[in-house]
Length: 188
Image (cartoon, rainbow, N blue to C red; front, side):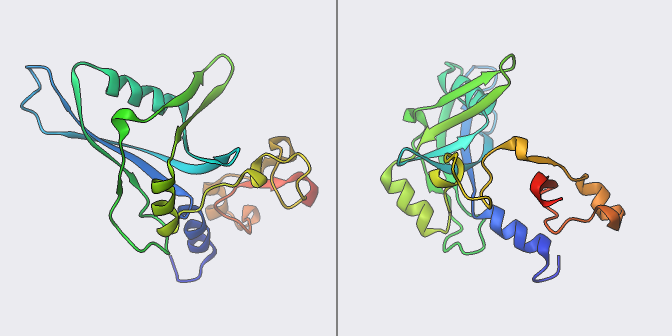
């Protein structure tokens, strides 16, 4: 990427919202106890709901992590919140996180088409994440039905605007926002 390109700017913008929940674990069964520790990470973002901060990710991911945490055959060795993706970070060291006692709230229902999960983030972690440049999605950006026209409030207002691979091959499909292949219906 060239400095100042729209792709670079879009990536920097998105990465200030990116947080990884990282978990190191070990199998405790006699057959696998001698194996090296394993590492799992899930991507997510921070979201504010009724004034409280949460880590938001897919429900099936939190369901799998809960099963891992609750298994008698697994020992959780450590966990952290990786907030090292933004361009204005001041630290490249993830923040230790008490995953063993964290509250995992999720919905993973294929029939209803719902797949989301949240983990409450306490004030201490919130301060550390903010200090490292992570920006949470504020409630005013996603919850208001009377938001301004510049705020995305309904998915039905958008349509696909080609695919990323098409915009790279065919300039006809090139978008001003190459990372977001959707176009607001009112901007036709």
